[in-house]
Image 1 (cartoon, rainbow, N blue to C red):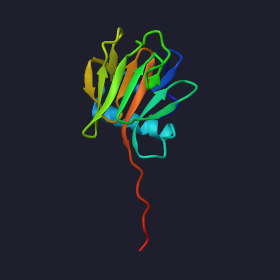
Image 2 (image 1 turned 120 degrees about the vertical axis):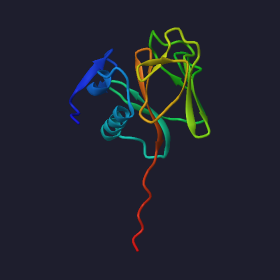
Image 3 (image 1 turned 90 degrees about the horizontal axis):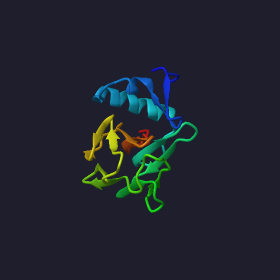
Image 4 (image 1 turned 135 degrees about the vertical axis):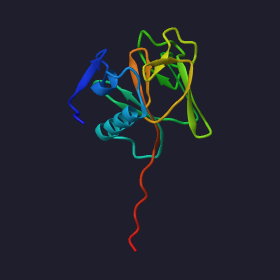
Length: 150
């Protein structure tokens, strides 16, 4: 995959061009995006579920715990400054090793893979758009166990 093909969105983050040009995201596109992100953005060394906040100058990995509130108010677990994000925009919560995204009746809505959603179980490689910010969801980063020589 050609890493140099990028499209800038709102001067804040970059996404691979193949993703932005698709009307919907199928499993193959999600796999390609996951491969591209994990090979180009250094993932954390700890196992677990993560969000990658994708920005032009800084990409930040956020480790997910039981819940994560997202919005522009300082009381949220993840505070994002954007005029199109509500004070309490959405929430991620874990249930039975799966992650549920819930829009908290935000004014401009929450999109997953370019579709507006109220509630959605997330899959590896899903892109969450909140205002002008894109978050990349990784359900589980698993490090291979060290091989033991016999």
